[in-house]
Structure formats: structure tokens, C-alpha cells
Length: 178
Length: 198
Image 1 (cartoon, rainbow over the protein chains, first blue to last red):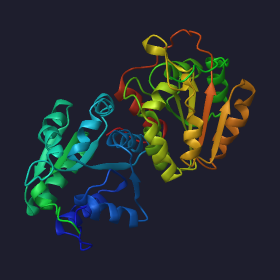
Image 2: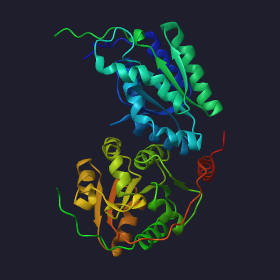
Image 3: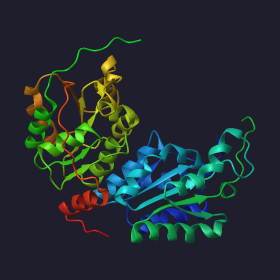
Image 4: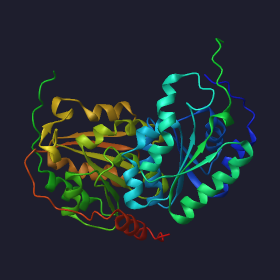
């Protein structure tokens, strides 16, 4: 397990603030350490619904359903989940749903686990193949602006957008025995 | 290998027609294939969202919709093959417990669009038991059409997540094709709820 501080990292709080200010009511997620603060905050917020998923493609459909019903929703996952979503993106594309996914990257920076690498390498191309616009934040000071840009493109211009959050934002995963 | 199940006998078109008529205010999401045709043949209303793809996504779409529209009954009508592909969504619904969401599986035990190959339910896999294990409040296994009113009462009551597995005949029915333009179907659905296009 990754060691996750209970103290929110500033960029994670900035992400939650953008979602909150943007009126997001549903946060669908497959967890990742990099999303832990946003998930915790959504769970604690009485005006938001945190929806834990068994697989990421469920979340693609769930956020589309939310929009059908008049609510804004976002999808949180890690890069390994992108491959699970590929066919479900046809729902987003065919119906031109506004769609925003925040995706923490694995398999790219100081990765310990080779099993994370193939999907990590293919994440951006897979999204783009399915018509999803990809933005990327590499440094903590870029996160808020990038997520806000993606948010606006999704909910103002009805685009499908994924924001990739680089693995070096989250830091090395500690693998020493506890 | 599991043995084949005895085939259901309910007329799917008659069942779906009675069900949708008895739930006139519900918001409907249909799974791809035959259940889209069944609902379209029964009633084509703006408050119906037809899937023509995204297999496995009907129940999850219904979940997002039900959470967004808590004062309306949301009715997912899908096939056994479609629900089997999205079985995890039943667990996610069970966690959320939306009182206004119902999932009705029109189960002919076969993949109808692809040449009527037997599906898992056709081999006796019991989706209703999965739904019970996933904490749906009301679970029905329906083998005769007379139970449609009892199911409609549950759906209209919005008193807890509801699941029904409806054992229908595998007989061929004519295709009745709903609109395939997703943007149109989305926008008319939202307009029926008073929501504007972007």
C-alpha cells in the first residue's frame, strides 16, 4: 500500500475545490492514492455523492446517466483503468456527453511494478483513439489550472476530456515491508 | 458444463408493454438490442434513453440518473446478456441503495442479436440471486405475466432498489428500431426533464 498522509496535499485540495465550485454532485471512482483526498472530501460532503465502482467503465456510464438527469459528475481512476473503458467511451462520443476524467498515472516515473507499465504507456493514446482530449499536469503548480481547463472544456464546450496527473506528483510508492 | 435451463414462456413484448404502461411516469434506460426494440414498440417517449451499444452500461447509466433524479422512478430494462456484462454495476447499486432505481432483466437465456447462443442465465446462472447478494431491497423472479402489476407497484413505490428477472420466451419478435442518433435521444430526454441543451 502507498503511505497516504491524512494531510491533504495542496494540489489535491485544489482539485476538490474546482469540483465543488463547479457544482459537481457525483464523484464516481475506482480509488487511487493520488485521489484519496478528493474521494474523502466527496464522501464527507453532504451535497456530493461518492460512487465507488467495481470497474472504471461503470463510471463512464454512471456519469453519463448523471448528466441525463441534470447533474454534473466526474470520474476518478488510475491509468490502468483506462483500458477497461474503451468501448464504453462510445456512449460519451455518440451522445456527446460532457465528460471529465481525472486519471493518476502509473507505469511512467520511478515505477517499481512492471505490470503497471503496458497500460501506463498506452493510456494517452487509448484515450485519444476514442476521441477523448487529453491534458496533462506534471508539476503541482500546474494542477489547478489544468484541471480547471479540462473542467471548462467538458462542461462548457461539451467535450470529453481526461486530465492525466503525472506519477511524479504522487511520488514514489513505498514497497518496503511494514 | 452446466445443464441448459428450462426456457421461459412469457411474451416479452406483452410484458414490456404492460410494464411501461403501468409505470407511466418512470424514466427508462434500455439496454442494447431486443429490450430497446421492446420498449420502442411499446411506447416511444422522450423520457426513454435507448442504448444501441455500450454493452454492460445500462444499469450503471440508470444509477447515475437515479441519483440525479431522486424524486422520479428510474427503470432500466435490459437483457440477460447486457446485464451479465455489467454485473459489477449491481454491486455498485447495492452500495448506493437508490430507492428509486429498478433493474428489470428480460431474460430469454440467449444472446439474441448474435444468433441465439445460450447465455449464462440459459445455463442456470441466477441473476436474481446476484441482486439479492448485492442488497437490492426487492427481488422478483417472474415466470408468469400476471406478476407485472406487482412489479410495477414496486417500481412506482420507489421504496428501495428493485430487481426483477423476467423469464421470457426465446421466440423471435420483429425488430422495432428506436432512433440511433445519440445526441437527439440525449437532448430530448433532458428536455423532457426541463433541462436545456448546452
